Image 1 (tube, rainbow, N blue to C red):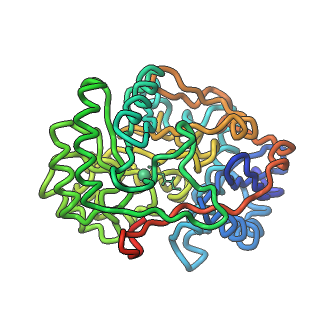
Image 2 (image 1 turned 180 degrees about the horizontal axis):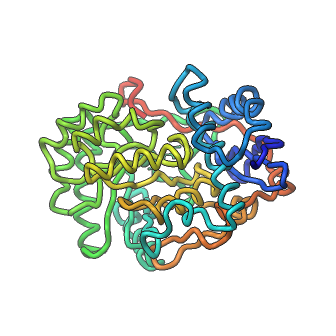
Length: 403
Ligand code: KDG
Ligand code: MG
């Protein structure tokens, strides 16, 4: 038995907010779990501190599945981003502890490596096509095999995904949410031009991806997918909101462009219909927001039956702890597709020293026992929490719109 002696939550903001759960056993082993929910961070802190941690003390850290079921079924209130991020943090930390106890990198406990490395995609974005392609060339030069392209929309003052800090940040930097203005027709006109120019400039031996951020109706998404078919995208992401999973059937009827969705999903129930009806090609659920390694493996196993591959969310607002977990998962899972890799700043990397590395378009979690990531608590203390939000989106006439 590895008795849990203590657990606490560490909030730090080295450029942006990260929430980390640290669990300690009586034998002195420690495990880390990411619990960051961008823009709603303190709700998970409170859920963990007030409701979860008291139930962990004294339990056997080895009983990962039982503790998962206890927290999921026992709460009565199932699912949702706050609950599932809290459960994910516990789950990650327990896998970290178990792998340290076994003196193995976590991927070995998950079945061992299924591949040499985890193919990752980076974000190239710019205010116009030219700038976006300049950024894409930089990623190509760094060895990336897959690049996501997002460009400003002509006629719109700002576009989410086109940020100042090119390598690192989605904007989450205001005391109150920034407002962007959106026009679907202007957007729909601009994207095929971007990808035509991209194929001319970058060639055909690099995977290209695009994120719609849930902004189209299914029929608009069908049209965009069809317009993009000549450019052979790796995937078109979050084409329409997916509360209604049936919506993807309409998109599927109109395009062969591969579809990805799921970065905001929390459980297998959010993607069950999408997967079993083969309405998507990639499932983007990730460790921190979908109940940890235990639940993500369940989603991936189910997806494998339907030839749906993984494509975990990996934006900068998921901490290095989640990145490490995603890499152990991605290295081992049979139906791996691609892993998103938006880099963290030097400040964040210093707070979370880690064993994972990037080389020639692939990442590897490293060979350190456990997740292979630590937290420098002294340094973490120097970066206090600062309230920050994701931006919101309105139509030109002021109507509140999809995110
Ligand atoms: O917190 C939200 C961001 O992580 C998200 O908007 C980034 O869409 C995103 C992506 O694909 O990385
Ligand atoms: Mg996305």
